[in-house]
Length: 266
Image (cartoon, rainbow, N blue to C red):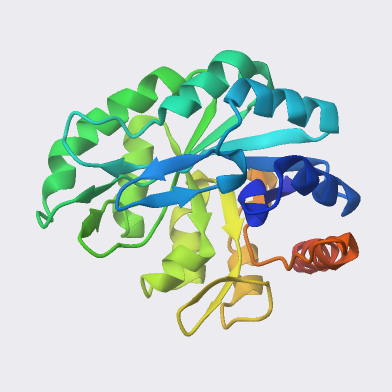
C-alpha cells in the first residue's frame, strides 16, 4: 500500500512548488488531481488552469515523484448522453498511460430533481468505464449531494453493487461519507473487498477535509476495517497549511499527517 497526497491540497500554489513541498515532506508518490471547470461555475485544481496535461506529466517526471492515481475531478452530468470521463483525462492517458496505474472518478451527479435518473444513466457510465478497466485500476469515489443535483451511489450498498457488477473498485472518501451521515467504519466493513483507494481526512460540524485527528471520525476503526494488503493507495486529502516563503510550515504538517496514518496502520 502506498501513502500519497493529493496535489489539489495545494490548488492555489504554483504546481512546481507544490511538488517540491510534497517531495521535501518525504513522499514518493502523488494523486494527480486534474483541472476541471463546469457545473455551476465550479473550478478546481486551479494551479493547472493553463498547463496542458502533456506538460503536467513532464513536470512530474522531472520532479522524481510517481503518480499513484489520476483523479478526474469532474463527474457532473447535464444530459444522459454526457460522459463522466473528462476530456483532459483522455489526454493524460494518451501521453501518460505508462505513468498512471489507477484512475479515480467521482460518482456521477446530475443537475435534476429526478431521483430516479441514475437507473437510466448507470449503463452509460458502466460502458464509458469498460474501455478503461482492462488497462487501469478504475475506482469510483463516493461524494455527497449538492444543492440542485442528485448524486449517485451514496448508499454503500448501491456503490458495492455497481462496482461489483461492472468490474470496478471503490475509492472511499471519509469526509464525504461523514457529510452524508454515513458511519465510515460500517461502510468500510461493508465494501472492504472492493476498496482499492482512500481519500483520508477528518470531519467535524460541517468542516470538511480536516487534518487527521482534528475531527470526530473514528479513523483508527476505519483503517482497521480495511483490507490494507489489497489497498492500492491511501491518499491524504486534508487541510495542509501554506505560508509563502515558509515551506517548512507545509512540509512539517505533511510529515505529521503521514506519521498519523502510519501510526494507525502499525
